[in-house]
Amino acid sequence: MTRNRRLLARLVLFSSISGLAGMIALPGAAQAQGLYTYNVGVLGGVGGSPDADPGSDLGNRGFQVNLGLVTEPKTVLTLRVGRLSLDRKSDFGSLTGADLTYADIGGEYRFDETYYQSGIYIALGAYRLQGKRAFDGSRREQTAVGAALGLTGEFPINSHFGILLELSGHYTPLNEAKTFAMGHAGVAFHF
Image (cartoon, rainbow, N blue to C red; front, side, top):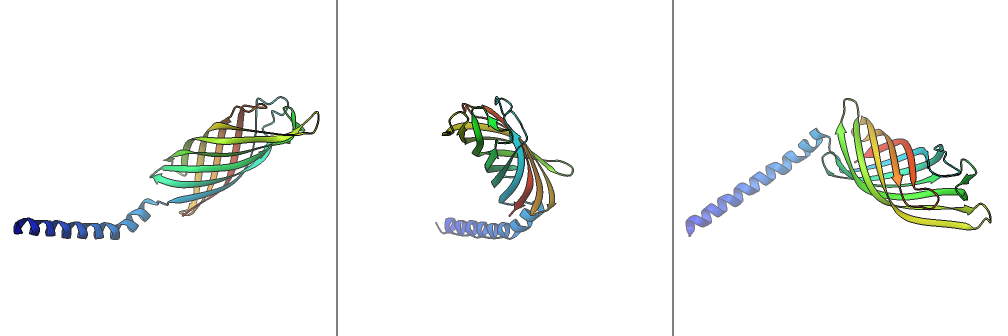
């Protein structure tokens, strides 16, 4: 019985020393790998829908905010919230003054390249198209679930700041248009 207690006491002491050594070494290891937990991106861009008739212009202006959480090295869970004004041409399908707001959440997988980090993401989200009917001026709004697939590229300036580029395609079963394409550029902050 006494032998088992001594063995248990040694095991607890060894585990405590190992855990303490690991905690002391962790900040250095994390810094050496360049890890961060959160990232925030602020982007401006252009886009539109190639299947809207009329209004298939891809030069409409928009913005997007990315909020990311690193779940594993090179894997980021990201919430993207944005708005795309679809009023570059006067009409977007049967709407005037239309805009698309969206919120997507999904996983992004990143790869180290020579001078930058590339990524690919897939996301599910909600899309809201609103505007006025061209023929009577009444307000129209439609919300639908959709999906997005995108490519990213980040050019690091330092460990906390980078230039972010994104190209994305979106599918959502809205009445006026089903597919949207967007390109964004902006800054990313890591902490």
